[in-house]
Image 1 (cartoon, helix red, strand yellow):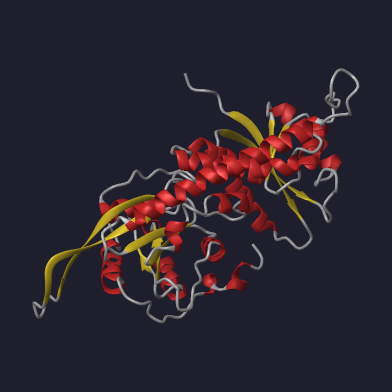
Image 2 (cartoon, rainbow, N blue to C red):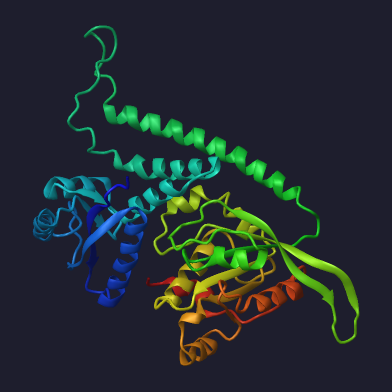
Length: 396
């Protein structure tokens, strides 16, 4: 018997400098995140407020009105697009009598549901512990100090919050040691791969079609229409064809191959705890010979998504230029959902990109050809696009 989805309300703050259409786009993405976590979205609200309230982040009157609306709709959860402190979450819950989740907490919950392997579970637990540690304040104010010493003659002892902090710090140390061991195992696996076999990493915004492209290139993979469907890096061998000139007949008859790795997707406001915890997994991206940047061409926020991808790549150590820069190919996926004028406009904005539809095989041969010509070998000079430049992420 399937569980009934829990109903929720979504809110986001709009300040004087924020464009309403952008806030609405963020709320639409938050709604997709909520559905991915198993929630049923009842209402989306933009709360206009010139300044952030120290105690509740939003206005008290706005929150009370939301609580009344939630009671009418039978919703028990309030999900906020903004990142809140622990004290702000506690204050909102007391004021509204609703269970409050901020954006980071929601993404962490999705990752907890998706994690399957030992490494992914450890990474998500580490991110959760580091997220919860500064939020313990106020969670135990109803408890007295524990008695210390023998009988009643000891000192005041530790507060419950101090005990919890110590336990969480101990667990964080254990998880970091475990992940350090798993990273050494991963490095050993990389070293054991056949010499001279190029490695390509698929990167991009979540749910852009990376796994679909992996399947089109390698014949393996299970694409799903879900945000963060892939947490664990999946590496498969792709056939690139024969390295032979059809006109002259010169070249080798032996087919060329490369390794293609599917990685965790990116998203705007990706929690820094997750970026840090998944650094070992994202090592597949840093150490790859080349990157295939996959984007959903039919996404209205395509340019913003590309800027997020560019910023996240820089954050994990993948610079777009320099002696160690990796060759990149932008793959604009799902162009089958676009009309001809839209495709022409995309071609003008991203002339070096491949327009593709991985599920139909469109553009896959172009991707293979790019990999055959460019890998292995030094990066070729190219003109960087706006989304790859550091200033591109200035306001998202």
